[in-house]
Amino acid sequence: MKKFIDVQFGSSRYEELVELRYKILLEPLGLKFLDKHRQQEVNYLHIACIEQLDDKLVGGLILAPLNNDDIRMMQVAVATKYQGEGIGTELVKYAEKRAKEAGYHRLIMYAMLSVVGFYEHLGFKQEGDIFDEDGITFAKMVKLL
Ligand SMILES: CC(C)(COP(=O)(O)OP(=O)(O)OC[C@H]1O[C@@H](n2cnc3c(N)ncnc32)[C@H](O)[C@@H]1OP(=O)(O)O)[C@@H](O)C(=O)NCCC(=O)NCCS
Image 1 (tube, rainbow, N blue to C red):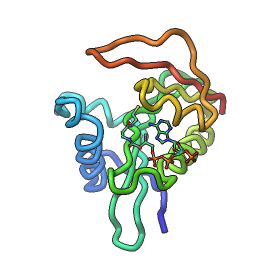
Image 2: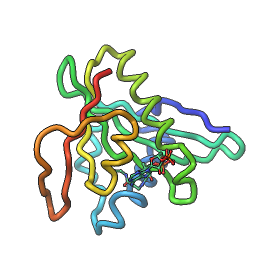
Image 3: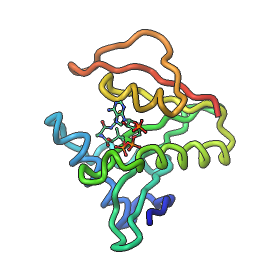
């Protein structure tokens, strides 16, 4: 059984999330998690999926407020071994619920082109043109909450 939880910035779970994000999202692109980014994460909502059998972190994401209406979802990652089991879907649904509870009306996501299908599957719509950043192509995806 999986559970979805809010994670406190700076907690040991938060450190596990940073590690998971590094392994799944940054390392494959040859990028590092820089400590200078850490402090701005204090203002974000951190969400994790835990396998209750062994208390292991299997997925996570970040919600970063943009203004009173919009919140940005970032760094969606599911541990390799657990991908394709529906965890990403449940994680994003939990994030939508938390964003809505917090009073936001739109969830914004800049998705790598390779995962646009995943977000469309969840009801996100592509907005504007695709664009390149550091050699990676992204699309802006938006969902009304
Ligand atoms: C992308 C990711 C978050 C999806 O999570 P997941 O738990 O593997 O996905 P789910 O099992 O919930 O998949 C849900 C549906 O989306 C589809 N899907 C999953 N990854 C997809 C992709 N890259 N492109 C298109 N569809 C995808 C699945 O086939 C599934 O469809 P189905 O229900 O018809 O079978 C996860 O695979 C991951 O962490 N990948 C590596 C990191 C990454 O690319 N993150 C996104 C950053 S923008």
